[in-house]
Image (cartoon, rainbow, N blue to C red; front, side, top):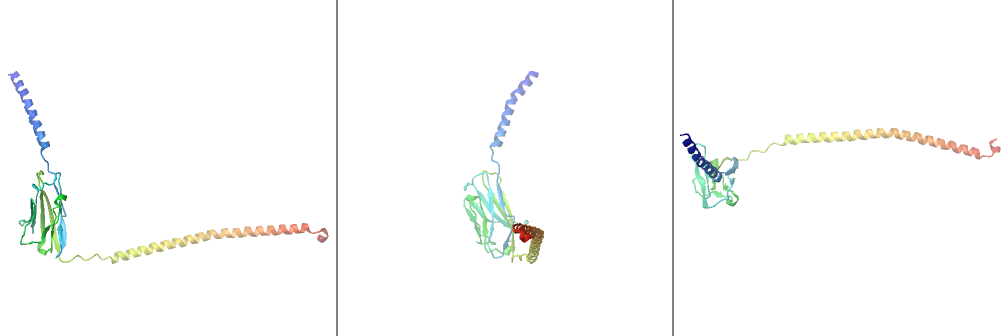
Length: 230
């Protein structure tokens, strides 16, 4: 019995090893998902203008037009059902809806992984949630991006820059005054340093002049005849 059990366990080992090896090969060989969709999550548009809903994607695999699939959907709120208005199945096809009519146009480039769309003459009723779905086999999972569009009736007022300008002017004036004061003080100090030197130079020059004068007088006396001296 002991020998029989050892023989059975030994015979199972090769089978188990083969199964493990096969599982590893299957995991390594199966395609992994590397799809990523990039969108602007919050977007504002002015009523009556054209807005671009940008949606791009990255993938580890080149786009195959025969397998690639994409669609855009719209919903007013998260609780509302989504309405599809743009699809790609072998070609880009806008779906005419009561809400958008023919105002939606494809504005991307599939060769550059860009599936953006534009909506012209944006209305207040266009405000809501826009979903961009992308699937690029052999990626097993699809990419998904969400854009929240807000439609404004007027542009927000520009920020009042009067205070900032006044503060900047005050700071600039103070700096200019400080620089001017430093220049004046520097000039005064330089002048004060030069005055004693000038006085000393004058004293030295006067002493030299006196000395030269005395020397000349002594020379003249020596050159006079003795009779005149007496």
